[in-house]
Length: 491
Image 1 (cartoon, rainbow, N blue to C red):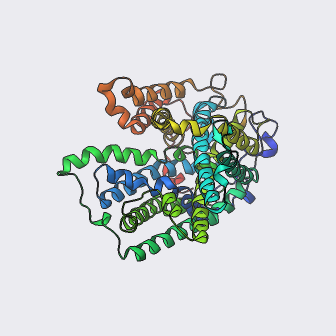
Image 2: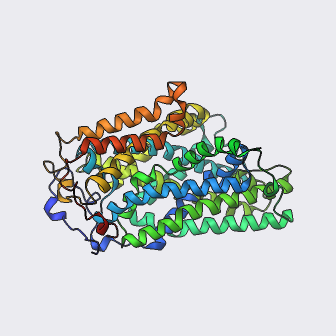
Image 3: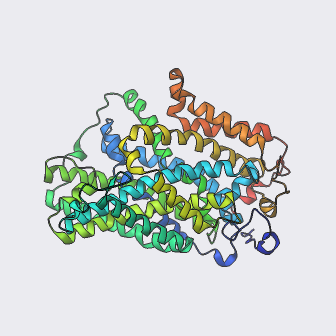
């Protein structure tokens, strides 16, 4: 059976749970093909953190092959929940917060949606500041007196040059998101391949200048035994999975525009694990060559580019860094909260205004202050989110694939008194499963003897909440005993 393209806008348009941005996509809106999804993942995965990812693993004692293996395996594993949550997006044309209504209730869906939005806003602000910093370094290299602009005058804790650079980058992001999801698609289509090309040029240039690949590729692993390696491998693997745990939730925001299941699946398989492995590998080779040229291994590409003497080379290099930062921040950290905030008050908040809210929060959290104390924000507060997002993914996947056998009542997802209204709009069973899953995932942060649970927070939360939700919902869904699941897998 082919995908059914649902067009229910006229029937459900008056509902408080409906607006045109959250509505099921029509046939004419299904324009994304295999290339679009491949380019989307290239655009999100070729960020600076990916480039430096292998460096962190090598610092822990791995050699470059072990590091690449860990990165690749982690992304192959996280691809599973990503594809499982992609299916309903394509089949029904609905974004993440609307899909969450099936398991959490028409109003309860705001709980996972806002949880996802909060962490996205945090990373949006941080990545906007990093992107603005790239502008700041570029302007410093090209404009005499840029660093002394405004002298000692401060704006919300930033110097005048830093504030201007931050707002320029912020403004570009808001312009793209305000043009809508189609503009996001067009931007990602060329941004991803361009950055890969520029990174390839940088790699070849450094290899030629260094007259070889450098010493990093010949350095052995620091682990003397397999048991020593395993102790570092599994926590590192969990970290690699957590790298894209956020997208495993809101991937329907993108797959709702797919022409078919086959095209979105193929595009994501080609785009995610391949780009993560290739871009991390390029980071290893470039860093290794930099050790010969500059006397020390430089993992930060911004530092390498800032050492260029040719103004044109500096301009091209920083253009690549800025485009890379834009593509990941718009797709990974702006699209999702835009839909999530829209779901909160559909009649008053659109996708565009949801994106603007994200941008404003990104300024108000003052990410430059947060980065001054990374242990307090990134490693503690944001670090707990894998233990929160894992349980949400477990509940949603269990609900769609096991309890409902991929069958949703699309009209009732937008109806205030329908199948998914539960108890006054909230599915208490899903909320209980979420609380218990989060408790077990994060208890290790409070009780040291259980710290192993927090080391595997995403896995613990995913399975505890998913299994508990199954037990609580057993035999309560009309689709529970539908044995025709196999025929829906390719729909």
